Image 1: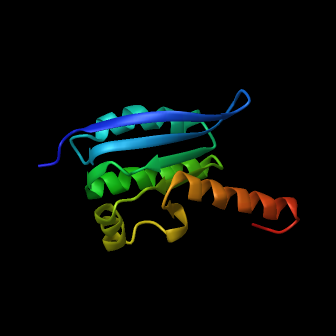
Image 2: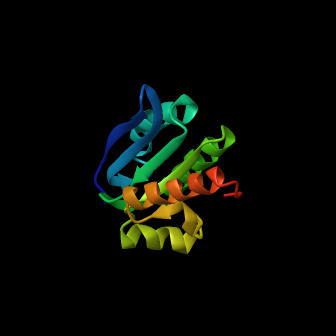
Length: 132
């Protein structure tokens, strides 16, 4: 049976503005650990930064409930004109998303650095007058 869940949240700021939060999930994201995830993530989704980044490098297990939780966070962020991304997705966790056909490839990145480069390229395109 999967172990518990630990969460580490790091705010990324620009000046005094809270731009994004990197949420590192450690352990298992499943029904028994969902209250821990909700307690940490819901306040950020409700009114925190414009971007949430879930770092899944240390996620050992995800159930359909866990996938639903991440999809719900993504949907809630989009409702308030924010964004939600996944980074460092282990192969077995990626397989769970693939089997469920849950997330488009554009929302999954190998690392936070890859995500930052993607976001920088979008912003450069906007600066150049192109529609990202």
